[in-house]
Amino acid sequence: MSLPHALLTALMEQPSSGSDLAGRFDRSIGYFWQATHQQIYRELGRLKVAGWVESLAPEAGRGRKKVYQVLPAGRAELERWVAEDQAPKPLRDEFMVRLRAEAVVGPTGLANDIRRRLELHRQKLAVYRAIEERDFAREDLLRKAQLQHLVLGAGILQETMWIEFSERALALLDHSNQ
Image 1 (tube, one colour):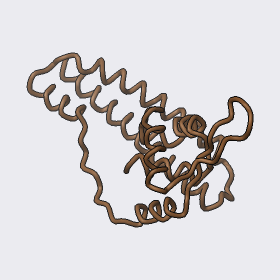
Image 2 (cartoon, helix red, strand yellow):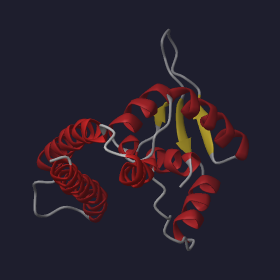
Image 3 (cartoon, one colour):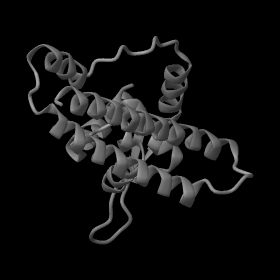
Image 4 (cartoon, one colour):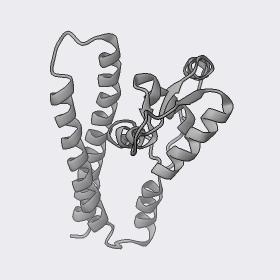
């Protein structure tokens, strides 16, 4: 995935100023694709140069913000990108290597970091569950909301998996230290 496509998606959902887009990004797409506000503003400039978005002139008065919206060429690019075949990305996680290293040099105290990570995964799962309850409790969701819920469900599954994995790792490390 690329930041330009994440921004095009967010702007297709709702035209926004750069600051509003950055805030929305932090509360939605930012859960699975990280970007700083500076990166977002830089990328908005590139999208504008590419002819994929335009910025509307701010309304008169102080403090008015430029609102960005997707142009037909930006929509076409997003459609092209969504439709292309992509292979699944291989797992590349430093934590897995740390566990392997624990096997050959441990015990190292890695369990303390796993406990910290476990708590972070529990917190994120609680946030995802709260979003699910707040935004997706209805049975008659439109297609757009169903797909958004599906993405949230992937986050819930991932956090659940990491919680279970961390608990198993702690049980193994605690048992091997006895």
